[in-house]
Amino acid sequence: MGTNVFSRSHASASFGLVAQWANALNGNGDLSECLEQLLRLVRADAAMVARISLSGSQTRYIARCNRRKGEVWPVQPRAFSKELLGNWLPSAKSGSVWRLSDLARTNTDRESGCDLQIDRFAEIIAIPLGKAHEIVDVLELQYLNKPAEHDLDIVLILTGTLSSCWQSRASGLIAKTLAQRQHVKCVDAPYNSDVPLLDVENPAQLSRSEFRICTLLKEGMTVGVIAQTLSIAPATVRTHLSSVFSKTGASNQVELLHKLNRQSPIFSDVANRLSI
Image 1 (spheres, rainbow, N blue to C red):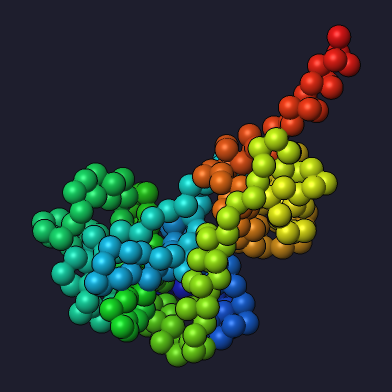
Image 2: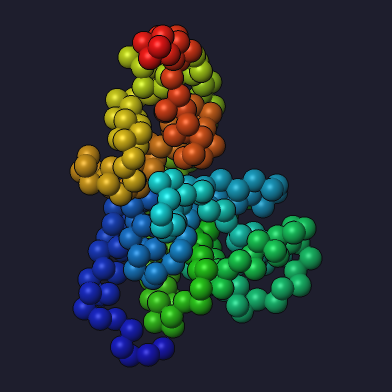
């Protein structure tokens, strides 16, 4: 490993990330914001923490983010750690680093067609954080282009500390986070398509923050601009938007914008008469 891996800015950012990660895992911060900071630090295209079931096919996302420019709400990335590690996943040591470029592509446990999806990436890094009760928590980084060696060196330097912090996290914190997200997913969408989403009746039962973010989104603002306008983190905006997706039945930002710009039949009829 080179001796010039860290510049002062890298060192400062790394120490800050570790502190933020530790705080988030003790209930005093946002894990999604930590991932965004890590993504910027090691210049990855996507970062996520996934909880993978060893007894089934379920993968649940504790936090995830990506860097897709020019999109208001990019499609959420999916994890490939289970396919990547295959038979090694149950026994992989916490804090170990598994790279797509280092592993043979002949694992029989990989899903059919998965190789075609993985081939989009120049590198995928999977880091098991801990395992218990037939589940494994994994930190995954994805690169569309070959990462620079010093970026990979930073990943290796941080891995042990991030894994150690994960194993000493506050009891029940991750289970609570997943339960809250599951609750949002299970909310029955009350949205009535005959009433505009941003109507005073609030047909989708958006929270005050969700309603305000949708208003700004309708005005053409990006996630970054909305975050600056409301003085909150981009990850917080995305969390609110994820809840809005669940409540409205929208699967992506295009569908949400269509719903936001839709007028009720009554309003449209009145507008048409006034234009005659």
